[in-house]
Amino acid sequence: MMRALRHPSFLVGAVLSALIVALALVSLVWTPADPGRMNILARLRPPSAEFWLGTDQFGRDIASMLMVGARNALTVGLVAVGIGLVLGLALGLLAARADGTILDAAIMRLLDFVFAFPIVLSAILIVTLLGPGLVEAVVAIGLFNVPVFARLARGAALQVMRRDYIRAARLAGAGPARILLRHVVPNIAGLMIVQASVQFAVAILAEASLSYLGLGTQPPAPSWGRMLSDAQTFMARQPFLAIFPGAAIALAVLAFNLLGDGLRDLLDPRLRERGA
Amino acid sequence: MLRFLAARIAMLVAALATAALVIFLVLEILPGDPAAAMLGVSATPETIAALRAELGLDQPAARRFLRWLAGLVTGDLGLSYAYRVPVGGLIGERFGVTLPLAVLAMLLAAGIGIPLGVAAASRANTRLDAVLMGVSQLGLAIPNFWFGLLFVLIFSIGLGWFPSGGFPGWSAGPGPALHALILPALALALPMAAVLARITRSAVIEALGEDYILTARAKGLSRAEALVRHALRNALIPVVTILGLQFSFLLTGTVVVEGVFALPGLGRLLIQAIGGHDLMLIRSLVLMFAGAAMAVNALVDIAYGLLDPRMRPA
Image 1 (cartoon, rainbow over the protein chains, first blue to last red):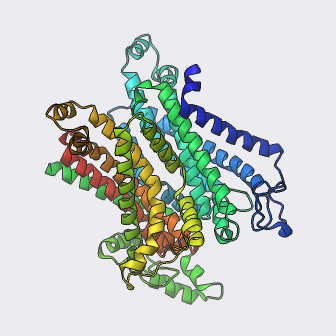
Image 2: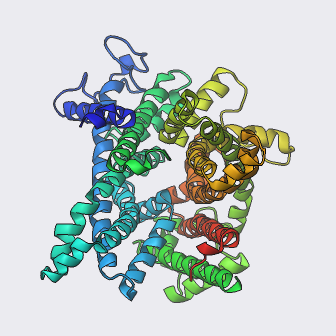
Image 3: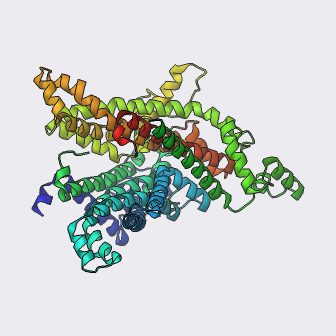
């Protein structure tokens, strides 16, 4: 615990992530103003006591929209990483269990193929098929996450399965499912959590890109990427419009990247020197 | 060696064919008739049938797929539903924007990221290292399109040094064209440079710890000479790999950044094609983007195999 508090990446990442989560949770019960309320008389206002971060082209309160946008970003991260983690872990363990067989090769080649497809492109295909929307974007980002977790789970599981205590468990009569769930999964959980934090950041970035392109979150739901795309038309008159949502995306991505880096160092001190 | 090369190329071709099939099938299950959509509600069944025949839509899916595959080789990719011109020509036109943009971004990323990584490694665990790695962490977190918007705010709207968007074409000479591409290329390059700086730093630190560096130093080379002549050379192998892997991010980055700067490139064409449900254009563009990423990955694998025989699969 003390070691964690002395680790700068972990500390900064944890504090920033906690802050974003707190803002998102608070937005469920309170925001400075109603984020959906338009007020034409207060369009494109700079930051002030009344509008902390100014207002957009419809007179909506930017601070409130950013808070609700945080909820949006975190939901995307959670669901996309959840899809990737659950499916990836299952496929990775299945491939590790079938190590060296045709099933193993088939799973891994399939995942290589999915992985070779750039994330925004697969999202574009899915969105072309299902129409633009938050759910479609999240599914696309989640599917892209599957190979990342599956490769990691397979490699780590193979390593664990070669250890003596697994052999001992097998000799004691434990079945393959029990060995995987009771012995392998707990041993690779740390690695998966570290990756989950990094993929969380990737998901937030990807959703922001898709929403910027108009393929992700649809109006009137506030999304940081969408706010940036709206800002483009008016930023010559009100530069703050383009600054705050971008800063929110960068801060969230930074927070989860640092958290992932810190967790990796804390869980595996051998990696600490390399820093990449 | 030849066997390795042939196997890797065969794998690439198989992956490309699978990608083509997946893209074709995904777009095939879309509901609706493109011919009817193109002609509008007032079209008679006869004109719709005639257009379906013109577009080849009256033929079975398998035949259309094979025709598209053959077209990918010959360049005859069919007619765009929205533009009513050959898809091949449309893609060719936009290529002149996206390719130079991607190359410029790669050069900028390498030119910024590698020197910063080497500087951080040569001063590892000092304040300079901490600052550089902090900056690179920030570079990783900032989306390329936000970089783009900030550059427009600062350098176009604020200082008036660069155009805020649009592309004058190459006919006016390379000067104005490059001038229009600098800001978008920089927006694409900075997140990549951040990745490269981090990879270069760790690769150089690892190389500096190797025995051959000690030998070189013992033979009288200065630290800087040993760094440049031996450590950097070996460290560049993982750096080039990452540069290759980053290429797919770069390509998808162009889709977003071309939008920010209103550049008439392939990425913007793709977004316009999605907006106009132009399936003919979408399928060829998506395959091109995915194919380019796969081809670069294969090239990296091959280069790796050439440099280090241990990397060749048995």
